[in-house]
Amino acid sequence: MDYKIRFVNYPRHWQTHRDEFMAVIEDRLSRGELIIRQDVLDFEKNISELTGAKFAKGLNSGFDALHLSLKALNIGPGDEVVTVAHTFMATISAIVLVGAKPVLIDIGKDWNMDMSLLETAITPKTKVVIPVHLNGRMCDMDTLGQIIKRFEEKGQRIHVIEDACQALGAKFNGKGAGSFGATGCFSHYPAKILGCFGEGGALTTNDGGLDEKILLLRYHGVMRDPARTPKMFGYNAVLDNIQAAILNVKLAHFDEAVTRRAEIAKKYQAELSGIKDLKLPHFEDSRYLDAYWNYVVQTTKRDELKQHLESQGVETIISWPKPIYSYDFYKKSFPVDPLPVTEKVCREVISLPIYPELTDEEVNFVIQAVKDFYTK
Ligand SMILES: Cc1ncc(COP(=O)(O)O)c(C=O)c1O
Image (cartoon, rainbow, N blue to C red; front, side):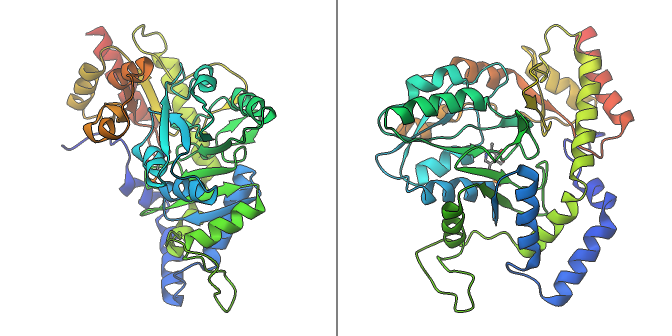
């Protein structure tokens, strides 16, 4: 279908910064700067500064960041990891693929982990909690921290791995996503808030020991010394140098991009907040600074709204239409009792376009199309 307004618009994004992108691509390719060159190191410094975490490592994907975090913390068979069902498959794959058991809990009114359910989900086998900061909004890290502390006082060590794949730039109590947990995991998939032109990811940590372990795990256990001494077994999960160079170009525009997203979110809020059957992603709580990666709305008429917007040429997406635990392959391995909020949200959420290149006219067009649906 030929959409009037795409959900993401890669060609327009390319055109906006074309000269800057072409300059770094031409330069790095002509000099053969391909694997873990200065751009990767600069990128890591930039991510560390942006998130407020002491260390950062460029990886091949957000999944790698989650997977290597669990590996670095020695999580494996017999261990339990608590997270939410309302997340992208990668969060749960990472847990299963290290041999641990995912324990899924429900979400709250902001579509993030319901912290009131966390304590009862923790068992003596629980080694990790993965809060997923969804849609550019962080989880309630205050309550999470208090719960973890209570268990620590009883002698049970529980690590926090932040799935911040959708939340670069978001803050809680003034601290950046990725600076709270043992590690923070970021995705630079093209559609993300900071996306490259292929696969990409990053991991942050404040722990020098973990940082070194990630360095080894991400490239066959090899140190970056001239002798390339292997110290352990590892993967090949390194961020491509050209992608790092692209990400550094985009990082220079990151603040303006987040500001524009917030501006669009405000416009949606101002124009759509009067519609009764439409819940908007604004949850007045001054502890949170949202990055608005995704503008999710919730309505009992979700499928009809999607159809109407399609007919008007507005592309939308649904994240996600079914809880992960309801798929046969999942149920066979880990039966889960249905989680009521997750179930309802899967039936009712829809994401509207939100990205820096969207013009005011296009935002107004989306707003009018939504209004028309509710007044027709
Ligand atoms: C919440 C969440 N976790 C993990 C991932 C995995 O990131 P990647 O696609 O870079 O592996 C994503 C990306 O879509 C995500 O949205």
